[in-house]
Every structure is written in C-alpha cells, then in structure tokens.
Amino acid sequence: MTNPQGTIKKEDVTLTHPNLSKLWLDSGDVMRLLHCSRRTLDRLRANGLPFYKVHTHYCLYKLDEVVAFIENHKNTLE
Figure 1 (cartoon, rainbow, N blue to C red):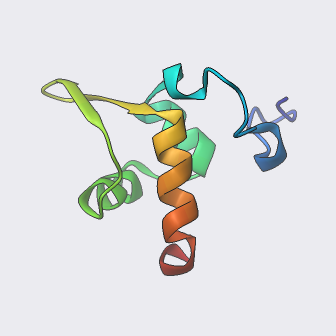
Figure 2: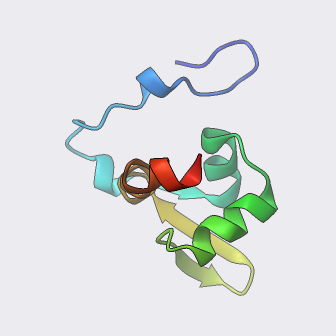
C-alpha cells in the first residue's frame, strides 16, 4: 500500500469500500495523503474542504469527504 517513502499511492485509495465514510483522518494524515503543507491545508479548508473541529487546534476529516472535495475541485486546484 505504501512505497518506501511512506506515501500512499492514488490507486491504493479505493472509493468502493463500504466503510469509507467511517475512516477519519487528522490534519497530518490529510497532508501526507495530498502531499501538501499545513498552509495549503488551511487554504483548502477556507475553500470548503469539510472538517470537524474537535478541539481548538485539532481537526478531523472524513476520508470520503476529502476525496469527494478533491474530485469536485481538481480542475480549480491545479
């Protein structure tokens, strides 16, 4: 599933898993998945990336919502 650098390959993320909506990611997971910085993640949230604030500085994300956001916005994010 991961290559030697520890990154997840796009083809390893399947959208047909029945429990996809139950998979939660923290900010670090999302940054590793999208290969982005904390500032870029902040910009994505400002542009509508769904997130759930658990504590003052702690956010969680549903994997299916992150994937759907990227799929819906991939032309504007390039």
